[in-house]
Image (cartoon, rainbow over all chains, first blue to last red; front, side, top):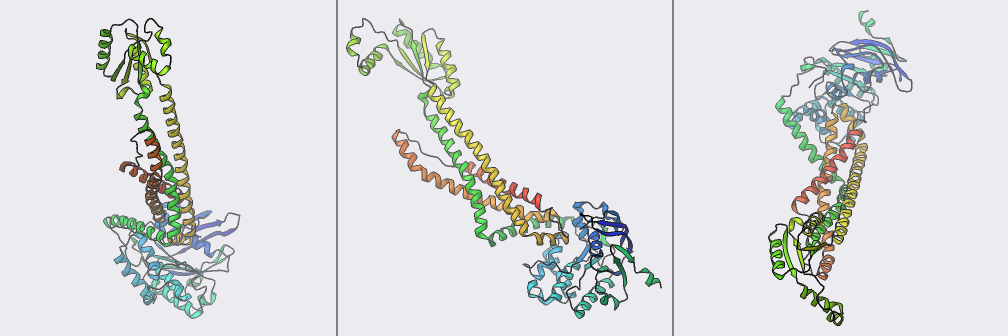
Length: 225
Length: 326
């Protein structure tokens, strides 16, 4: 599903965020990406979502070399990737419905079709009763769940989450992770970047660890052991 | 249109949108974003109206100048005596010959009217006006020639055409000298040309100003929506999709700005019309200012809309693509 081949990334100014990173995530797999802040977790996610381009090496999704994706195609490529952010990036002046419907309307769904899907997604995250609310009226956990509903509403085969539980207490974090597990169960590949080690420790998922831009553990050794 | 997952076999469920649906949604998007941008403008009515007024009033000046030039042209057409040709006939022609020549000219298609002032009439007029009455009585014979006043036909009144006619008439056997007072007409036309060129230059400058004003306003709009644009790009919006509402905003600016131009021009002409009528009365003329006609109003409107679009296009081209999520 995702494949990094000796990927390096240097930002303008010389900061080397990733050094020769290689790993692969299989279709339908759920994995955690961890490491202290500044280790390169976000850079990995940005390379997958085409927000950054690698300085060296190749990034492949579903066998497609992202180098081949032209600027004009980026928007279309992103429609296949559900993204969840720590600060959830909702539009504060739009209702929950409008926020979740945004990817569908961009993609060209009719309003009727979009409504069905938005309701299904909000039901999944347990916020169907908040459909007419504005994000400001919701708690942090609820806002994050709106962000998740928006990420999954067009049923992408790949979900990326950048510190999705960053601002949440352990109980809410567990709920969020459970949502990801549900999506993973129906075949969605999930990659979650987090520095919350206690969250990972309780689960038996593959964990990739970055340190100073290098992959010091790709999580495969434990699985085979 | 999945780039990474053709058909999306691997995903939770297949997503497919037919070509027909795409076509319909494309226009639906346009309609939605068109109305949406109008709603956006209505949210800040004062700011929106200010921009529209700037656009409208900037175009009022060229529109008014255009009306003035158009009216001066109309006035110019009224001064036909400006290209009246005076023919001094040779001495010693009989009355018969003068009459024949006059009739012959009358038949020429370049000539609208011929008026004969014979030497007796000329002498009488001179006597009356100059005050040399007694001195003239001492002359043995009338020294004045017969004079024909030739008014060229409509197609031969321009300075060049009239001059050509004058030269042609000077060749006639009966004619001693043909005179055309072109100076006044030339001066008048030079002034009209000056106004016209000035109007063109000014209009061009103001059009550029309008484009810059709209472009800058849209640029501010874009940067105030930076976060929203970023989120839209993250969930897969193309640049074209994001740009469209801003282009429609430019269109609305032009649409309303054009109407403001009509109103302001009409108001300005109404304001001037009394003064113009007074001047016309002093010259005993029936001349009245004529405003923009329907076709000209259409051109003004089209220009306003076009400038609004160009301004917003420049802004979105430069600034929407520059906003990248990070």
